Image 1 (cartoon, rainbow, N blue to C red):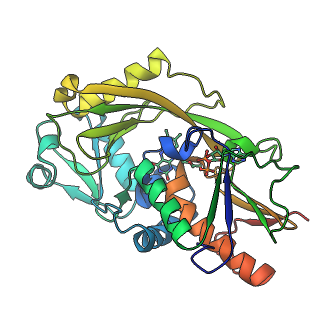
Image 2 (cartoon, rainbow, N blue to C red):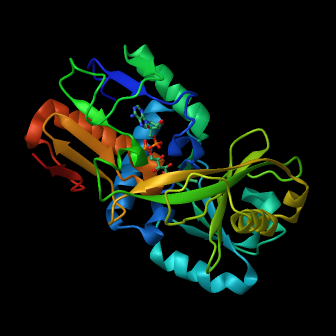
Image 3 (cartoon, helix red, strand yellow):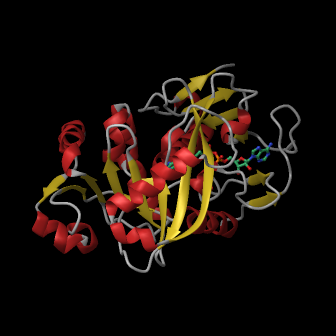
Amino acid sequence: MLAQRGHRVQLVETAPRLFEHAASYRAGAMIAPYCEAEAAEAVVQQAGLEALRLWQAVLPELAVNGTLVVAAPRDQGELQRFKRLTQGHETLTHKDLQALEPDLAGQFATALFYREEGHLSPGPAMRRLIATFKAHGGEFIERVEADGCNDVLTDGDYILDCRGIFAKKQLPDLRGVRGELVYIRSREVTLRRPVRLLHPRFPLYIVPHGKGTYMVGATMIESEAEGPVTLRSALQLLSAAYAVHPAFAEAEICGFASGVRPAFPDNLPKIIVRGNYIHINGLYRHGFLLAPVLARQVADFIEQGRAVSDPYHWIKYEE
Ligand SMILES: Cc1cc2nc3c(=O)[nH]c(=O)nc-3n(C[C@H](O)[C@H](O)[C@H](O)COP(=O)(O)OP(=O)(O)OC[C@H]3O[C@@H](n4cnc5c(N)ncnc54)[C@H](O)[C@@H]3O)c2cc1C
């Protein structure tokens, strides 16, 4: 966003292989302001709706096919609870569901449909953002480590630290929330939009990432461990896929993965201004949902200083 506005920007990324350590690369990349409001502060929905518009301007390939929320017959109470806690939905009859997502209609009699929500495939979206950044004159410096104290950048007016969980040393309040997922490929099942399967203990989702591939995610574990997916989590993830459609039993498992969501105690993001060093962090479950709004706010701050408006109260001055 800064490059688009004509600023000179250098982007420093340390990973030996692009996106290797980025939580963003592991995300479902759902832009779901209404569904996320079930367990988030109201401000997340408000900012998420702004973000949807900003994403559409930057990435025209954003799929705005909506989200479907379903529950097994024994968990219909969960569906009613979810409906009460969220806005922006329609309750689908079985006939509506059949017309919208035929492969789900065999398993579920009804669903909630959040028409305005979108989703991305994180890898292609992130590559596209880098290409757009370069097209606006941005300089991408790869395989170089920028450190909170020992920065490679010396001639800039501002340093923007977007290191996620890797900035923990400078942000003692930051914690990790581990998310595990599995990628599968199916020839039998076709879904056009993310499907959230409600469950009292293991609510999970399936996101179509194109060409028959799906990301099934994601666990929420209070841990910063990056290691392999546990057997327990694998069972939960695969059972969720099977519950959404039994033909997923024939799907190929393309791989398991995990990522660590960076979160502050209130699970809301923050823009922490320490002189000309600005931390943008704590995006928790909402990195894709909220990133463009945070980028816009930081760009506005850099251009307007403390006079900038802060409708979501995310800017903290710590000089
Ligand atoms: C399984 C899972 C599913 C998710 N699903 C969704 C979803 O559907 N929708 C949504 O909105 N959010 C989702 N999220 C949350 C989202 O992924 C995170 O909020 C977001 O990725 C955080 O982004 P970030 O840029 O802060 O951190 P990261 O994506 O982790 O990026 C940090 C980057 O900093 C680099 N770095 C680290 N140290 C240095 C250094 N010293 N110098 C240079 N570079 C460095 C790293 O290599 C990395 O590329 C999900 C997260 C997980 C784990």
